[in-house]
Length: 391
Picture 1 (tube, rainbow, N blue to C red):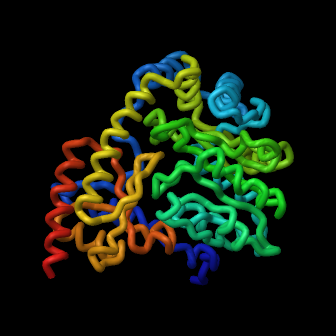
Picture 2 (tube, one colour; picture 1 turned 60 degrees about the vertical axis):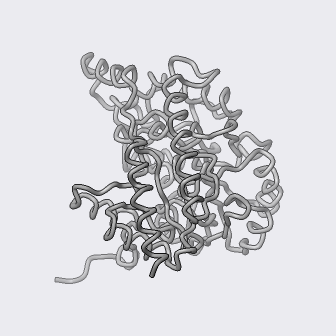
C-alpha cells in the first residue's frame, strides 16, 4: 500500500501537553496541574438557555455566521467592554477560538510566509502555521520584562518574508499581560512593516488588577487585526465549543468561505447558551465571572508565593490561570523536572518547552483546580525539590 500521508502531516509533532494528560488518567492518586480549563461548571442560567433551546426545537443549522442575536451581543460587548468596534455583520461565530486561529491562518498564510510567534506561546500556533505552508518564527520573551513582546524584539525578528504576528495576551502559558502602553509601543513597528495582527484574546476577562486592553482598540489597528475570542475560559464553557472571529472586511469574507466549507456553523444549542451569557449586561462585568476570577486570584497568590518560597523563581502572572515557575535552580530542564515529578510524586505539570524554547527551564502549572488539591500538590512538589536538592 502506498504512502498516503503528506510530508506536513508526518512532520507534525504530537502536542506536548496531551502526553501528561494521558499518563495522569492511569494514575488514580495523581494531581494534575496541567489542564487548561476552569474547574467550575457552566453557570446555570447559561445551561438553562441551552436546554430551553432544545426544548423549543431549535436544533437546526444557523446561518454560517451564527445567530444574529448572538453576533449583535458580541459586537456590543467588544465595543463597550474593550473599545474594539466590530459590527455584527463582520463577526463569525466559530467552533471555539481554535477554529478562529485556523481560519485566520488558512486565509492569510501562503507557502514561505513567516508568521511571528512570541515565545513562549500556546502549543497550536506554530503547527497551524506549518500546516498552512508558512514558517513560524519565534520572538523571544523573558520573565525579566514580564514575558511581554517588546518593540526591539519584534523589530529584530522581522524579515522581508514576515507577513503577520500572532499576539496572545493574557498569555498561555506565562500568565503575562500587555498594558495599553506596552501595546502602543509595538504599534509603530507593526505599521512600519505592514503586518497583520492575529490577536487571541480568549483570556480577556481573566485579568488581575486592571481591565484587559485589546490591540484592536488602538487607532488604525482594528483594520489590520483579526480578533479571536470565545466563551470557554471566562464562562467555564470549554465543552460547548463556542468562539468568534472578527476581521477586516476582505479577510472576513475569505474566512467565512472557509468556515462555510469546513464547519458550516457552530452548534446552535451552544450559540443560544452563549447569547444568554452576554444578555444580562456587562457594564460592570459579570457576577459569575467575578466570582470565578476572585477564586482564581486567591489560588494565584498562593501558588506564586509557594513557588518562590521553594526557590522556584516565579514571575507574577497577571492574567489567565497559569503560573510559569523556573526550575533552573534544581539543575533540571522543565521536561526532566516534569517527568521526574510525575514519577516520584504523581503531580503532573507541563514542561515549558512544549510552548517554545524560551520555556526550556520552566514548567506550566494551572491553578484552575481546587485549593485543597493545590495545597497537596505544593506539598508534594516541596518534597520533590528537597529530594532533588539533596542529591
